[in-house]
Image: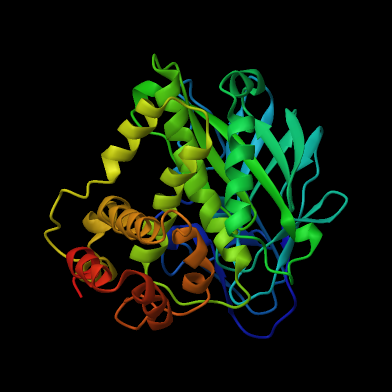
Length: 388
């Protein structure tokens, strides 16, 4: 149930996740026992004079094979008796409203990333979503550099056996060193919330979803090669973590195309694996699945970005493979030209501080800084992978 400021005009209520392709879990939003009109999926009309809306959430028990975190569902873990509440599929927001507050009333513990006060949690107004957990939680805490991190797991013992908290700690320390939070971000906003969600290896995939300060991370259950599945989990986790820390490092909103955000996060998801103690052959196999410098791209990333913006979602996977290969080649050239004294890590702050061009090209100041080190080798890579 949500109280809204009174108004003499109709307003719009929105479920943010529907616009991102997620499935609504809302049941019959209503005001004074009257269902709200829904002119299109994910949108409802809040009639003039109405300031209290209630709705149900279709929370399903987690099946035996687990839940795919990329679906960002609100679910119930019936064996441990706790709930995952996903804002993008379950919480209505008033269009244009500033940050909201969620109050959870119920038994057991509750946890989110953004505390407002005891029993109350902040809900961001736009951008990245948030996730919350309550009930019989397996909760742990770590202080990792500038960040405090809370963990909730569907199987705390299983997660510990896979050493996922230890691996995440190493990954976060590495990423925080190259992407420190902006000085304007207070200590309370340097709090992160990680939810570990197991998924059966037979489902053939493991996902992740980065929120504003919280994120969902699948780990694979029942795999014969646990080292390979753990490497996959860590790669996904570091990818999502990169998105979060990159946003927290900025002092202002920077315009960047989808190809750049996803390819950079994926490259650093792979690069972070080197900080782990997982077997080198396992890491090389996973890296080789995405980074393939010997492959000649059919189209540049700029052309692929245009197709994506026009609605062609089939090119998205190339942002992960071709895009990550582009950054890997730039990183390799930087290390070679500087006798391993410099890498892409050193240029990240410059890249993330400036807007990309309207056509999706790299910021000119970033290109200029790279060219001073790489000369014509940079142009060869830009033509091959970006098509410019």
